Amino acid sequence: LVVHGPGYGHTPTSLVVAGGRSDEWGAARGDIVTGKLGYLRFGSTLLDARQARVWQPRRAVHRGATASAETLRAIIREIPGDARARLHSACRRLVTVLAAADATAVWAGTRALVGNGPGLTPSGDDALVGLLAVLHRVGPTEFCSDALRLLAESLDALLCRTTTIGAHYLRLAMDGHFGEHLTDLVDALGSGNGVGTEQVARVRAT
Image 1 (cartoon, rainbow, N blue to C red):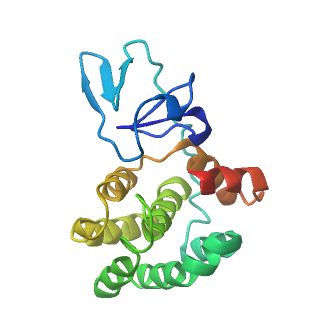
Image 2: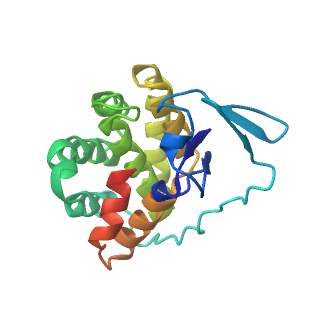
């Protein structure tokens, strides 16, 4: 469970605290959250979560007719700024070997990304979550189904290379669960209508 303020958007396993500032919680980033009978404790805060509302992501609108390796390459090309500069080459290589259904090369391409970069969720993990989001929400097609299977087989053996939180979000992504801001961005990219700078900024901030 991840506890954060409303600016980070909803995720499948987060609790968004609407009131107060995080610096008033008596907790530091990375502290453990424990819970019992609807109450959560983190740092010096005891939070009553019994009446919390449950967020549900929008249902995916599958665009099966166009979901292919080239679709993914086109989406990767649209990712702007420093994220693209750092990761788009590795992602494009991974998409190429996914399209070829080369399990050994998929494992190598996935290994190059898992745990790659700084932070609680390394940049390479974030790229893989984004790739999984596209495969889940733009599909299903035979390509997407095969690519998801190959990625899951590789990731199962590689999660030990990343952080606990990075592995947590990768497991969620393999099962098709993504955060609010990423879901909005991927759906916009998949629609072919383009994205706004605010959508990109929200994903970068989280």
